[in-house]
Length: 185
Picture 1: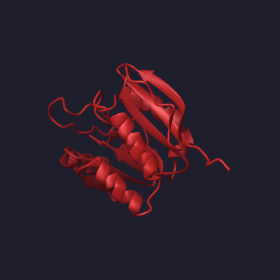
Picture 2 (picture 1 turned 30 degrees about the vertical axis):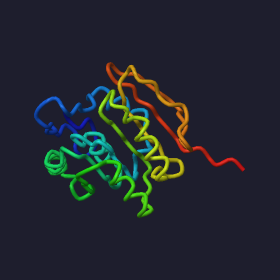
Picture 3 (picture 1 turned 180 degrees about the horizontal axis):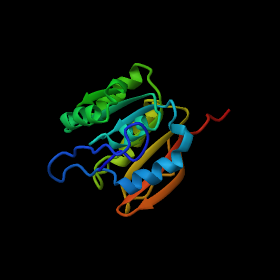
Picture 4 (picture 1 turned 90 degrees about the vertical axis):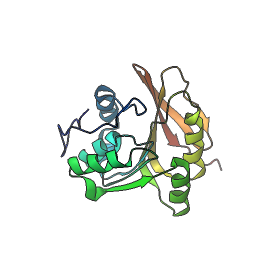
């Protein structure tokens, strides 16, 4: 697993031992960031269930301004990968419950241009994380929320003000892209 392009191109990332963490494959990340294109430049990024931090670090390597990475179990791996990529100065790491930290960020009025979430597959977290992002109004106007889930799981069409705009399947993963709908007048 490595950073694909940008300032940290080719940098190998550390993965936690065991199979509890399932990092987004290089090919999937490459396709995802090709779709994101210029949205990454100067973006404020939130990475929920960050695992190795590969998604946020790839975004930073490609020109994002800052990233908040949250994970309950992989803090030491996130610290090491931020150091390896020489992007630590652009990273805010949070250890603990993703939902608690998301609520704290929302109470502080923080919004993000890009939000990535890669919760454990088949545990029902996809809908819960959609609700957390929507209720906290964490997604900035014109922002994009990218949710990775198991290929057998369907992407919810609408959750609150979030609307599905695109979905793609890559092997065992389904990537769902959401934008915030404007409120009806």
